[in-house]
Length: 148
Image (tube, rainbow, N blue to C red):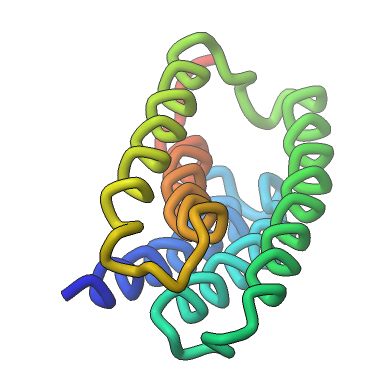
C-alpha cells in the first residue's frame, strides 16, 4: 500500500516535468528543461525509498538529493529569466504561502511514513515527498494563465 504512494509521487514528477519541459499553455518559449533532471532525481528517490533502487546503499539517496538541489538552482535561474523577459508572471504571496504549506505537509507526511520504513532516513523520505509536491506548484504556473 505504501509503495503505491511513491509510485503516484513518481508519476506526478514525470507529468509535471513534461508540463514544465513543454511550457504548458505558454508554449516552448516558457520551457524549462532543468525540471526533467529534478523529476529524474525524484523518480529515482521514490524507487530507492520503495526498496527497488539499491536499498542498502543510503549514499545514493543523498547523491540524488544533491543532484535535485543543483538542478533546482539552475531551474530557478531559468525561471527568473522567464520572469524578467515578461513571459511568466512573478510569484506572489499566494504562491509563497502555497510552497510553505507544501513543505510543512511534506515534513509531516515523512514523519508519519517513517515508522513504516525504518531503513530509510528522514531526509530521503522528505525529499521523495517534497519534490513532486513542489513540482505541482510550479507546473500550475504553466497550466493556468494569469494576468500579469
